[in-house]
Length: 82
Image 1 (cartoon, rainbow, N blue to C red):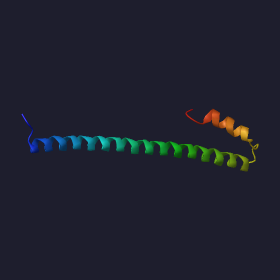
Image 2: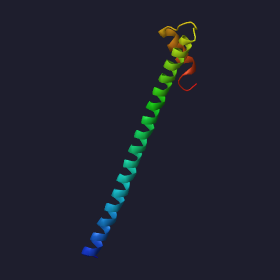
Image 3: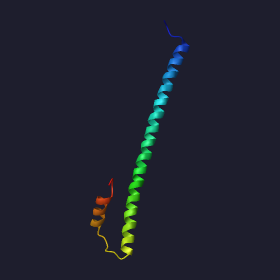
Image 4: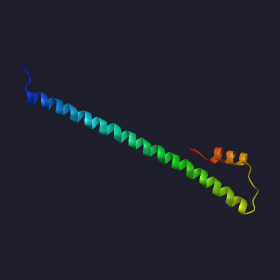
């Protein structure tokens, strides 16, 4: 049996709607990943700011000044996912 113009139109319209939904889902996932990546970058920057502020405070209190190696060691010990 041949397809009528209306049947063809409905079939293609439904197909188009499915594609639209798929594109929306992909776009949502891309936007979600961008937000996650941005949050991770912000967290890393906050860690760096915290370390800078901590060592500045530490030095202002008259404690022993820290070398760059001390900062690296501190970050490896207490930074990251620890």
